[in-house]
Image (cartoon, rainbow, N blue to C red; front, side, top):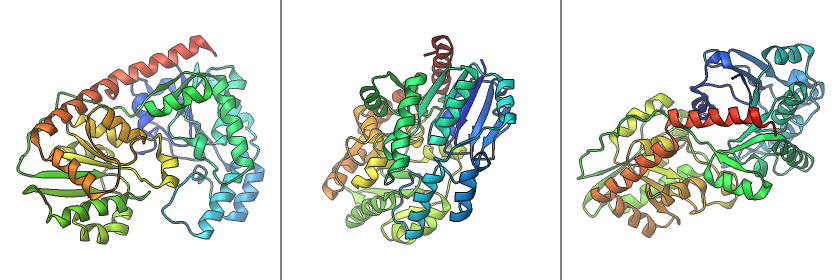
Length: 416
């Protein structure tokens, strides 16, 4: 089966933005796949046989706007970025870039020929911007090929926020592509449920999947509790780790005489920015990790930390998100300390499946209660068993990539 992928990021195992759908396409041969990348020139030729880039060159108006705001080709897609702080100039460029993204597109005869030559049976798109949606609709109109849309984030509620016309246009195009899609997919069960009610279409959830072998050895020294945080420190995550560390410092790093330590693995620029205050709070800043290193590193810890901000402004962007780290944590057969709003998708997913302990208010009493549960080896064993079984159920690559292929095959027959 030949599939055309349309997205803002290339299909790759090295890009954190791409590894989710790279895993889903792992049952496909490169000869079955081609990709149109929006504004991103780098594509891994090992994973697709053909690729094409839709860039600023496809819009003369955008080229003019970019020359004014000094925004390089490829920066489209940052329009929903949430930052802990933003300069006036960054905010202005973010706003102007959203308008650049809605400029008219003109597809070249060479791009149309490329599309017809590949002649896919189905189009898969992550639809993270108006430009991506326009490209998917152009491909569908040109070929009469069915579309499968996959929402990796809550772009519908967050993209172009603070603008008027781009926001209106975004909603219009999202309604249009949902109506025209044979299948609609979401990144988390919570998003699928919400979108199902909202758009009156069935949404299936497909999350990050990975190879899960035999149950890992979880035998570690039970005279201590060694916690690991892996991921970015933006979106107030550094603040939450600092608070957690300070709570432990108040108890001299021990809970009921059991030593508790926290190690933090994050991108190098994040560690450089937050290292001083985190280490003052007792959080050891280790290093950055490559995606392929994570599985080996988690073997050395009793439990993992996942944090999501309680700040309403940030929660609006993260409410349906389920990080790629969550399935990796679960596959390790150890519990997750999930700190964040109870109705945030990842926190809810962990707690509803009893794969960890939740902290739903950033208060020392709540944190201490959760840590006391985690220092108990029997509690960790039970929650770790639940975590591993959940990983097998929802994140086993051979199973999920097979289910994903069947959805695409059904879309070819369905032609909504």
